[in-house]
Amino acid sequence: MLAIRPTCENCDKLLPNTSNEAMICSYECTFCKDCVDQVLKNVCPNCGGGFEKSPTRPSGQLLKYPPQKEKVLKPVAINSFLEKNINVDLRER
Ligand SMILES: [Zn+2]
Ligand SMILES: [Zn+2]
Image 1: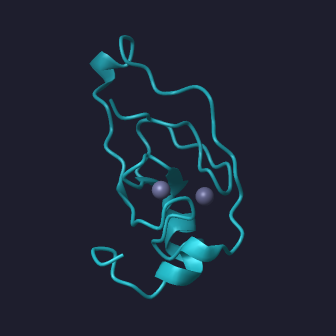
Image 2: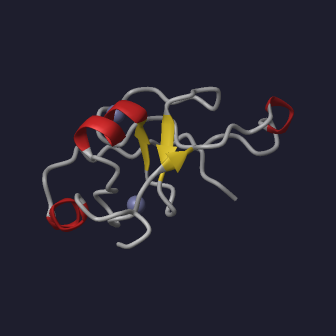
């Protein structure tokens, strides 16, 4: 099941389930849209993959399957994944 994380891993911005700004990679690393576009250039700093918009869970199911409470905060420094993938199409990484 998809982990709906509460915040952006880079800037700590709140990303509630209803947010239109939450972006995830295939491993559910979660960042806000501003960080994905402007800081990460669509390269996940943890795995090198690209991002897609995170889906919103229907509100009626949140009681049974609530969003994750623990946040991940790991501000991004330029690293090898970013350097290697920043100019490579995300389907060819
Ligand atoms: Zn952010
Ligand atoms: Zn990732």
